[in-house]
Image (tube, rainbow, N blue to C red; front, side):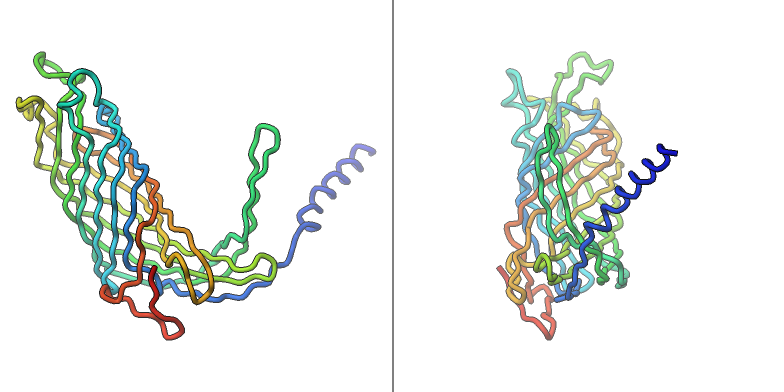
Length: 317
């Protein structure tokens, strides 16, 4: 009986903790408009990783630029350039003859359907970290508010070229081929693009102003890469490398959709972006890529079709 009473007391105390610590947060929505967002982004991809399971010599850490632009409501374009500042296979006495990783993409997209939906949206009010022994504990305070989620679905496509070092150790019956050669696969990508945007600003009586402002882009592409270059020291090894021309990829990118300084509400927003991509492509086989990017420029450009809402005005950094 005593054990039962102790157990009941324990659960009563534990169960009472959330109640006793609960705090009512009153808030006011200052802005809820996923249409009033930036339409041009330019990023420094400061830390990008690209690694293929069948070509570890070609794995690389890259730096480069990427950009996205929306023209009015339906059209847009993407650009990416990455250069490998550290390519894993670029070593040994022949390293000066081996190429760094380089990838170039230039394409466009067209929106087919759009819709808005009211959803419960989590807005982070504060976050803090503390050390407890060998662990770091992060405490995050947030609130769910009803806000508009803008969703769009479209098609995309464009030019695609990737290349660098290819390790040939797995190639059989070609004794004279070097252990590493330079390669490039060039062609195009075509696929689908899904975009969701939230842009809500609130003011609370406990933590001041807070925002949830971001765009998530999901894409699925088919890679068609018929052009192949495979050379080393002036010798052509194209007939000895992977003859495949098709591949595919799935990816996600998260980017901010507000200006750095939102003067209407005296708020500063963050400009980092991140993304991940997985798939299969010729020569590299299964591959994974990811990036952390810093915003160089983000604007609401009238030349690209931005129209300020009546309650606001067009500003840019």
